[in-house]
Figure 1: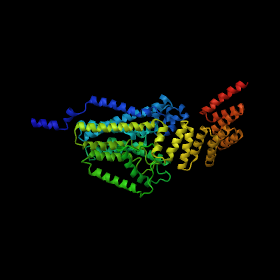
Figure 2 (figure 1 turned 120 degrees about the vertical axis):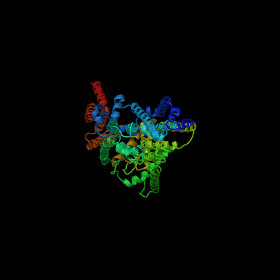
Figure 3 (figure 1 turned 180 degrees about the vertical axis):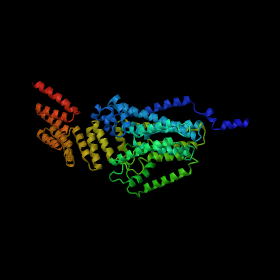
Figure 4 (figure 1 turned 60 degrees about the horizontal axis):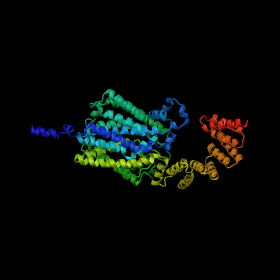
Length: 577
């Protein structure tokens, strides 16, 4: 009996009863974690729309009257449906959009906990280590500063939403009662997979993750589990093939991603990604130098030295992971998961931006699995590990909170970016616009000048620079920039602005001449009619002004400035009578 008692006490099956973490502790800790997440992202939750947020469908006036079906036609219908829900709640006010992003991030953290917990069980960690390490991994996912772009940026909803469905499908797959999946559970996985891929296309790799998981852990380094789960793989692979076909179609039409990206061969992008992948790892381990726009340079050639070193390191790491797959299965599996989930953005398919922080949001689970596997190798006491992981979590919370602060507004975001990379033309341009948008007009003109020193100014910069000068009440300088822009691209837009500047300078004839040039280029450009109405109104010609305003409104029924001008014009005519 004495020997049997000793054996029972030391066996892994009996450990949870005596040393596991209690359910109430997990629940209490979960609520504490959610409160910390909210505190970290509070500045962003109450912040404005930023950068590409302003070009999302719900910001366009025409979407106000569109039925739900029109929102769902096109790419990423599940993502558009989430935006539609926000729009019904708060229109074009950003609060609920940010709040839903953070809520999705919280749900993803919970799914990460459950997924890590299951893998730790399979790795024989059925004592206190299982819940402690799984909770630590979930906290790192939730608090890590590299996650802020995917959470605080409304346009990155595609990341958090698609990853939610992806992780949910993965969790349903993992938490099955037997090695062979049942038809109902396979159908649920398929439905969640469909929701994921219609939120963002990079989740099309899910079938390969499931195959990899079955090989490693069902029952272990065998294709038996793969064969048993034909109920799942048959429809999922068909769905995945359809998803990949759809993605290839979209890539064929895109100029920013795919093999049509000008001046970016696939082999240059690939050798660049051999460096970028290790940069992602570095940011996970040492999250300093985070930037909304890293402006990561592409490799100069296929023989780029650091690219070749990075590729050699990847080949060596892949080989080592295979060699040690039985001795350290969680570490080996985690490394393969990391590479697999990065593959849609960090492989052979060129994308205009070589490195973007939000692309680590999904692949981070691979790094967390590696971390969990390494922690299992640490033979130490419960107290020591708890203290060490708590300290690491507190540091991560501090860094995450510091990083989230820059997402409170456009100015802190782009000031941070420019401070970290002063020669980044795009970041300097965005900072200049943020200054203009904040009505710090003189500072904006100086920032545009600085941006123009980095690269020859194009049409967009010259027009925005002119508007900053106009905001600073220097219409002469604004006119000079607009005329420079017109020489590059003689559009209706720039000639309309030239007309507006001449009107402000008290030169109505020159203003009308510029507006006539605008309308010769585009007879349907409503703003030109509106500006022409303003010129006539300033001359006291209310009838002609009213006619121009009405033309502007017919051309563009959403032009509220023309609607208000019509009301003012009618009131003025009434008083004159």
